[in-house]
Image (cartoon, rainbow, N blue to C red; front, side, top):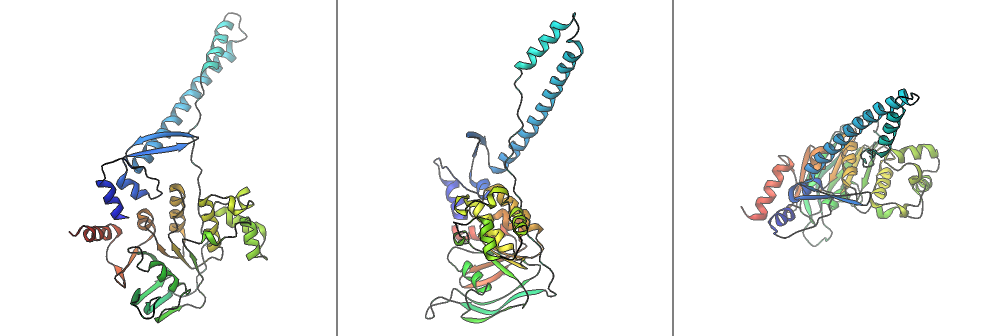
Length: 345
């Protein structure tokens, strides 16, 4: 996405962007248009400035409401004290008329909050969950491999983000780790009691759209009590009527939450996440980040969301030119190297 940031920052014409990537918005936009209750409000500045302005406006509105309530209470107190007094009845009536004309301030509309509560797995008495030993893989036996000689270990405490250009084999490596694809050379070893679940870019498409989330879970786990399933769905923001309506009627973000609920239902020790922020709005992305930060298991993620990478991961692995290697630095350091390659300097 760095090339797009640079391109847009050099573009001299107006561009309208719809994006859920917070850092991308901060890097390229000059104005934010917020839509709520069928009304559009324009804010100057980037997304961080928009959040700060919205928070300040909400705080100011709450103070204004508090002051208005105090004023109305004072006027009502006068009316209650003197409405029965002949000498001051007209003054009390005047206060009542004034109160009726005051337009009550409504509380700020707060965006619906969502939280992810990932169930923590039980300890399994080992540090190393999965090891890749001299692993290579290629779809064409006669052609060069996508990657080769990969040696890496995923531990119970790993927080790894896999980065690299599109098309270099990041999702394929995830499939090899998940044992969906066997390596063409080398070995993938997994502790015999470790539970691994994977969320892919296309996981939502694999849901049974005609069933409700509750029906889908009961089909897969028929012996589990419905209340246990509903509690888990609720922990992923699929509560109340959402758990009972057909999945095809849910929004893209709600479908992603159902898919996330499905892959976390077995309390995995390791979550493999391939672009998990797709289809999620900014508030839900933030909730996902908080959920992963509180998750006690291991996380291996492919993402272009800089905010997620820096908040969740403490290791960067790079796929590049057929190699997979640990990057010595943070994501900002990695961006500088990519920019240097893009611009040749």
